[in-house]
Length: 97
Image 1 (cartoon, rainbow, N blue to C red):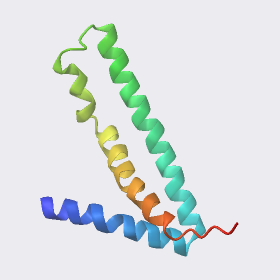
Image 2 (cartoon, rainbow, N blue to C red):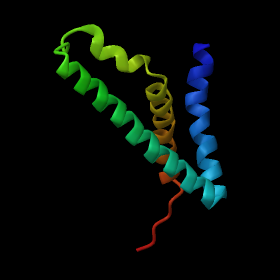
Image 3 (cartoon, helix red, strand yellow):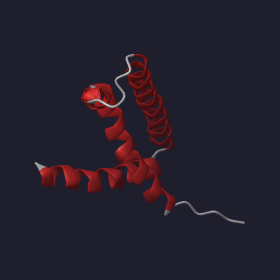
C-alpha cells in the first residue's frame, strides 16, 4: 500500500501536468479546485484552533482532531498533489522577454 501511495504521489502530478498542457480548461479547473481546497483546509484549521482556544484545551490532544476530519484530509491530499504539479508545469512555461 505504501508503494502505491508513493508511486501515486510521483505519477499523478505528471498526469496533471500533461492534462493542463493539453487543455486550458483542465488547467483552470485544477487551479479552482486548489483554491477551494486551500480555503476549505484553512477554514477547518481556523475552526479547530478557535474551538480549542475557547475550551482552553490548547495543550491537549484535542488540537489533533483536525487530522480526523475527512474534508481536511481530502483537501490536504489534493494540495499535496497540486504543489508538485505546479512545480512540474513551471518547466513547460516559456517566457519571452
